[in-house]
Length: 328
Image (cartoon, rainbow, N blue to C red; front, side, top):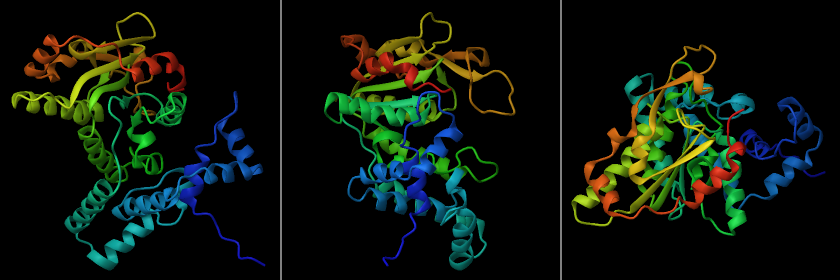
């Protein structure tokens, strides 16, 4: 009788998340349907590209031994941070906190340098406030509709998708710090790979202290400034930011382009809430300034002399499908 192999918990978690819910189906009903029909999971695993499962396991093991805390069903699975990271600390580094931190940084550097975080020209999509799982589901569908890899989003089309959703990001104490360090590092790498017309989708406005406001957008704008200062045409020439349910604006969506992005409000959560870190609606946030403070003057002059293009294809696609990527 052939030996039965247990599917690794990471593989179960990752490919189960790819099975779409039926209309009106609750999370428990969805999980029960998958449990009662194993072929659904097998079908998703069968669609994996060559080497995909190995990347998934290698990347998650690396982040786990760095101290990343697994989430959900995978929290008790193999290589959990609570056991694997402690073992590495005890066996290889003793109990020196500084050594532990250096090791975590080395693991994150390995994950940043050894895997792919690039995006197609004119197709980069940054996001804040939308449902990341829904966005990760929609981007490949949009690419399939266009018949090519037209759009790229960090958690949807790069190797970061193998980490996304598998580890605590806002955990208590140190639980989320390793995962935050990882996404900060690869967001930087992703931002440096962008070319052409860049797209961002934000909800209500640009949230202060978000990865987009703190890392991704400043990186793009400062790279543009540096190249313009050298007399070069910048790698990124245009930016479209589509805001869903824009604060202080009429309509469900508004697209801002190039110099116009300076008019977008910087928002913060205004209602103290012990249950959620997310801004959950227009009444839950306030504007505390405008994005114009981030735009270097040389970039503004470049855009002033440049004819404003049509909104990016990605912004138009998000505009037409925005209910599909909103939270809730």
